[in-house]
Amino acid sequence: MGGDQTQPTSAGTSDEKRKPSVFWVLAAIVLPIFGLFARVEIRGAEKLPRTGPFVLAVNHHSEIDPLVVALAVWRIGRAPRFMAKESLFRVPVLGWALRATGMIPVARATTVAAARETITQSRLLVEHGRGVIVYPEGTLTRDPDLWPMRGKSGAVRLAMSGKIPLIPMAQWGAQELLPRYGKLRLWPLRKRMTVLLGDPVDVSEFVRTRSQPATIAQATTKTMNAIAELLAQLRGIPAPPERWDPVAHGQRETGRLDSET
Image (cartoon, rainbow, N blue to C red; front, side):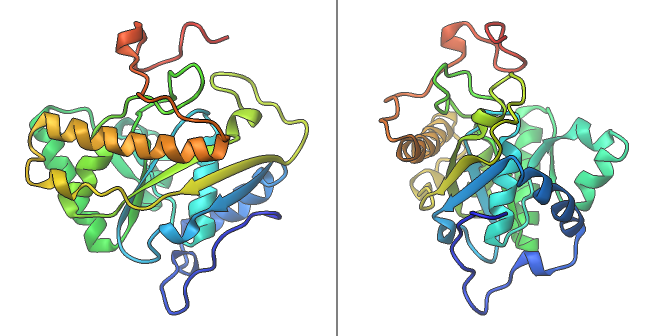
């Protein structure tokens, strides 16, 4: 995509883009089309490990921003694998595509079962040297100004279970193409979108007591604050001191917001 800016891949390191995969086919189809409507700038590409596992935690404010994030990760040189609801893996064709690209299923389960699944997925990431993209908010932000809201614990649990680098990323501009719960705005073409990656979130202080809910909550808040600070840099305005809490504002945490049109 013309106009994209990335840091070059370090010489001698592996590049997942060079390995034949389903991603080649998807990239050949999706990127030229998306490139008609978006111009994505990537900052801090060097923050994403060129090899080995990673957990990339990203803010979520538009239904189309997964394309922006996937494009950025692919441009940097890593395969863009997301966590996806387990039910999607049972959908014909879509399920095949998710499995073929190594996406990670997330099941609704009890706390014990969820913890066991996290450990399993963590081991697989380390074993295969793969990365995964996680939206810690779990859905589109409910914050009226599109700042990251309160996060869920999946990203930090995954990172701490396998001692995997937890990389924060902020992205901004996708809402100009597709507003939250809105309609596509195709004109003018080539809308500018920017992603910014930050230094790994240091969660080492939480590892010893990671089984305690309060500890997980603190690590999650630290991660969401890191994402918010990156977004503040992109927007050029300070982030709110606290993350938006849907429950405290009488909002549902899933589904379409009633106030949206």
